[in-house]
Length: 549
Image 1 (tube, rainbow, N blue to C red):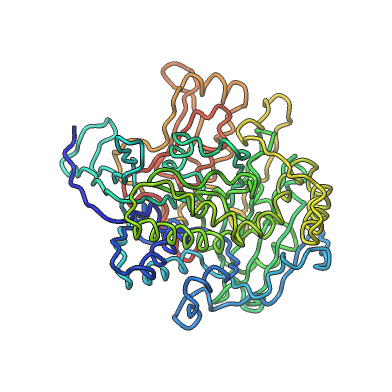
Image 2 (tube, rainbow, N blue to C red):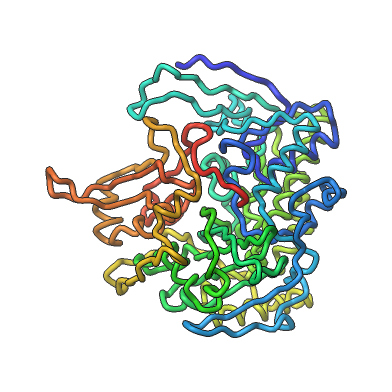
C-alpha cells in the first residue's frame, strides 16, 4: 500500500479544457468561498487542446459577457467569408448556402486557436481563486463505501517501465471532493470507467468518433484572407469507402489552420486517415494556398460524432460528465466548444445548489435535466441525423438526406426518425475483403511523413515509465488485428505509435509500441477491432505541447 497525502475540496474537475474551466469559473461566480481544483494532464493549460477552430461565441457570451474586451485571443479574427466545396479529384463545386438551414451559418463566429482561448480561460479561473494544477493527470477514481464518487487520485511520478519505483518516485495525491466533474474530452479513460460502472449508456446509442488531424501553416500574405472559412467534402475519401472532410481557416498573423476529419466507422482496414489528409492537401484548390508557405505545427485528436442520440446519462452519485466527455459536438457545424462551456456552467450551477443545500456526493440529476432542457439539446436535436445519414447512405446521398432532415427539423416537421449508430470498432472488415490502398509518397513540401510531422507537435514523454497504451492480449493482437485485419493500427494512428515488425530471433511478427510518439488522440482505444488496446494517462506533463492549436 502506498501512503498518499490527501487534499479536501468542494469540487475537483478532471480536465482543464473549455468545459472544465467554464465549470470552475461559474462555481466561483456563484460562490467565491467554494474550494475548486482543476487537474490538467498537459504540461500547461492548453498544451493538449486541439480544434479547428471556428467558435460560436454563445457559450462565452453567457459565461464572461465582456470577453471580447478582456483580451481573449479568440476575439481577434471574426469569420467574414464562408465556403463549402464538394471536391472531385481535380475540381470543386461550391454548395450554395441557401441549401443549408439558417442555424448552420457561421455568421458572428470567430476563428483562432482554441488552445490559446483555453489558456486565457485558465487565467480567468485562477484570478477568481480556482486552484489549477497542470501536469497532474487524474489516474484513478475514489469510490466511497456507499458507491459514490468521492474524488480522484493523481498519477504517481517516478515509476519505471517495470513498475519499480525510481529514486525520484512521488506518489499521487488523493483529492477528496464533495463532487467530481469529468471534463476529459473525447474518450477520456476515467469517463469510460464511469460509463461502465454506472451503466450511463444504457439508454443511448453508442458514441462514434472521427479522427481530426491538423496542421498550422504560415502562408504567403497575398493569399491570406483573415476570417475566411472553407470546408470540403468528397475527394479523396470518396475513393476509399469512407467519409469525412477537410477545413481551411484563415486566422491571425498570416496563418491558416488546415485539417482533415475521417469518420472512424470506415470498413476498409487499409485506410490511413493521415495519408488521406496528406493526399487532400495536394488537391489544386487546397495546394494553391500552401505553395510558398511553411508548416509550423501538427497534431491530432478524436472527435465525438454521435450527436444527441449518443449523449449518455450525465450524472451519477458524486459526479457528472461535461463537455466532450459527454459528447456535445454539433457534427455538421464542426463545433463543440460553445456547448462544452454551457454544459460546464449548468453542472456548476447544479453543484453549487446541491452544496448550498448541504448535500454531498448525490446524483446531480438536476444537471442532467437542465442540459436536456437547454439550447444544447435544442441545437443537437436539429442535427442528430447528419452523421448517421452520411454513414448510412454515403457521402453524396447522405448529405442530401441530412440536409432534408435538418430543414424538416428546423421547420418543426421531424418526419425522419433518429437513426442509430454502430460501434466504430465493429465496423472494420477483414482485410481480404478490400483492396490495398497505395498512397503517394510525401513530397516534403506540401505533404509529409508522420514522424516528421509528429516533431511539430512537440510531443515528449519521460523515459522509462510504464507504457500508457495497454494491450490486454498480445496473442489476440497478432492472431486477429494482424492476421485478420492486416494490422490497421499501423495506419489509423496519426503518430506512428504502432508497428508490426519481425522478431529477428524467432521470425515471428512482433507488435512494437512507440509510446513516446503518442499525441493522446485516443484513436487506438476507439478503432482497435477487438477493443484490445486501452489508453491510460502517462506520467504528468507527457504528450504533445501544442502551440497555437
